[in-house]
Length: 228
Image (cartoon, rainbow, N blue to C red; front, side, top):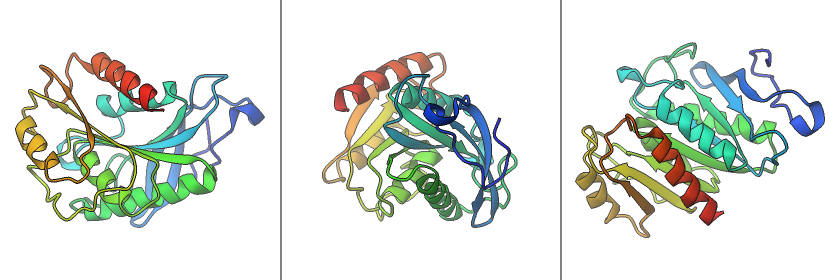
């Protein structure tokens, strides 16, 4: 395990032969220390990019332990993408208080700066689920991201109209039976985006992908591998 300090280095297994699964780190954020976990691709697979994955709403139980977030990280790892998932301010061991998406966006930018320091030269992907999708979309227009994945973006809870369309490949994933973020509202919003994101609708899936997480992973692997 890595020592939980902001100075922890994201070990390169090719050099150090240190396992890189569930490595606990702390990252300095604008409101205090942020709790995070890193993971690497399978042993022997090169790391071709780094992905930062963001969790759902902090006030409704969202954290880095969320199952959709965990499966997003697993999927990226299998594609050769190292991952960082972290708790926004005020969640788990992360310091600070909920800030309606503004401060959380700043948290993400701090994590991205940390990633750039730890893995200079690597392409950076962003992925977010629900509230996390809102946060990563905000950050993707302000930071040089190579690929964006948004799962169930909460267009019915937050104002997406003022967010600039990121200049990178973008995959949007939505369940057509989402009881929290209605699919038709998401698709109506997609029509306002130019150019629109690649949109992957999954049938008979609710907001939290209960019983369908393996389907989510399989669809993502197929779509992202084809786009690689």
